[in-house]
Length: 324
Image 1 (cartoon, helix red, strand yellow):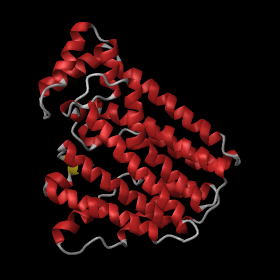
Image 2 (cartoon, rainbow, N blue to C red):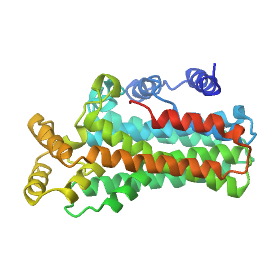
Image 3 (cartoon, rainbow, N blue to C red):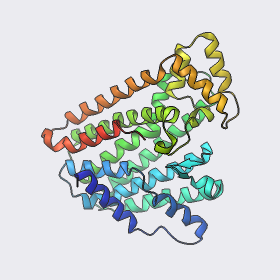
């Protein structure tokens, strides 16, 4: 068993031993439902790997790592309400299985539970961890609002999109790694480097997700493809296509993205055809690779022997080469 596998087993055992049930059952059943699904457990895995990298006790880091996982799942529950998404991880979303009101309240409860877990961590660093989670919670909400704003804006820039995904996705990866470093009491410079490693890895991860949304296999990806197009989300693929397209294709894209939200297979296929015409999939893949390579540079800058960083480097490579 690899170190990553043993850490993930530790996380799953810890979560399996937690009790998320209660009354009224309508509030707690969705929490049990989403937290028992598993998923990649990427965020708590990164948190514990960072703690281990800097010589910390990963048992001490389990509670804040799981707090981050509960927080992440809270964001998914609320995202699915806003996107009216039917599937997540190949299963019904909380929004679709119950309803938006229940999903809203269950998500709120998960956020509060995440903060409760932080408060149960070692008092030596619980304040720092709590401050970091509060910071990232606000940033994620800012990112989500930018994402919503973009749906009705005609002049979204590529830089604005990158700022949005940094807030919505990348900062949480940076923060969980930073939390692991805090628990291990790493120095300030190394803590900054591990945070920036997570930021750039998160940027690559989100760009990969954008590609999967258009070109992934639903049986592997676990979500309906074309969802971003159906929801008029101005991803990097859309914005790059708009930049490169002829006036006729620009007009077509803009017109299609003014349609009401909802699956329209003809719309999705027309947009994908324009993306293919301007090779935007390969352009975005190249940018994703640049962010991934930048992330490894931050890891190299950490003042530790290369062999100590190998596990985290291998896990980053696994995330970069994933197919879902």
